[in-house]
Image (spheres, helix red, strand yellow):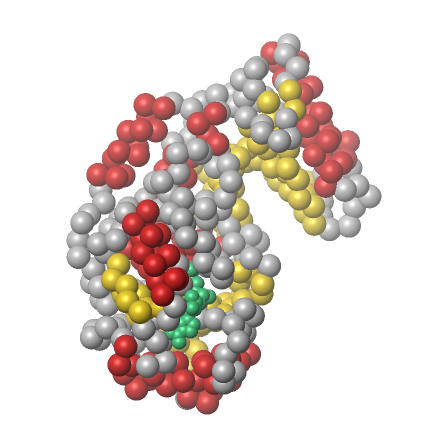
Length: 380
Ligand SMILES: C[S@@+](CC[C@H](N)C(=O)[O-])C[C@H]1O[C@@H](n2cnc3c(N)ncnc32)[C@H](O)[C@@H]1O
């Protein structure tokens, strides 16, 4: 197989950052789209991106991207594809579909017709009728119907890469590591400078920072990638890539600090850091983000944080006041630093910024789970 077309699904709102990451990791041109990025690259990119990307969710080999007029035409487009390079005769498969736009068919209809086209194509190439298994398929396909466009791909990842494998302690309001990574990218943090997340919860932002600084592949704990079941999978080549990437990591000393008000979250943060292999890179202590006396004695250049939104917390003085006191604390003691903050209570945060007299350098809308949230970059 020479160069292949790919697309990767990414969290909405960080497509440009994810696209830049693909370009950096592979040295190819990448095109951002809504909730995804497109690029062409070699087959080895499957190994490289699944291990090393920090902002992609699922990496798909793009088998078809075309306009269509009818459900029957979707069948014809998929029926033309040769599946024998990807799926073995004794393997089962499933098709997951999403649909956006107005159509006279449902996403279930799309999955059914695409599944039939895969079976018919394989039958004509190999004279074998492939089995469908919706519960535990060996191979998963993904079809996206967007108005008149069909984007059809083969999932090389399996479940989303935001599940890194280090989250032993599940914080009830945990941030997706992909978004944490995007926030760190936006911060412009130089790894030789001091960084703090003063409301660190289960330490997602800090772990992502440590993985970046130490050049550890973010998904190195994942051993169950979907590509390991695909026909082209070369386990020797893959293990060589993995070993090579791991050997490029470093044991440098970095100034990555975290504070948390609640003891049980702090203990959870420690457990997660240990699982991620970065306990000796992240310094954690109990503290109050609103009280300067509890901060570590460092001059922080970068503050990256995911404070409470007020959804699950009852704040004594209200969320706007909480944000104001936090911003005043930063302004008094870390003037000149950069703050990156994600919140779903963005109106209250903007009004706190105005009250304290701080400017927004950049803001972007993102989806944090089902919540509409915003990431802000501010000069303190
Ligand atoms: C949205 S959660 C952070 C989740 C974290 N990003 C993760 O992925 O696990 C906010 C955290 O801030 C903590 N917190 C709230 N008020 C605080 C304060 N004044 N000082 C320090 N931590 C605080 C909460 O206990 C909670 O763990």
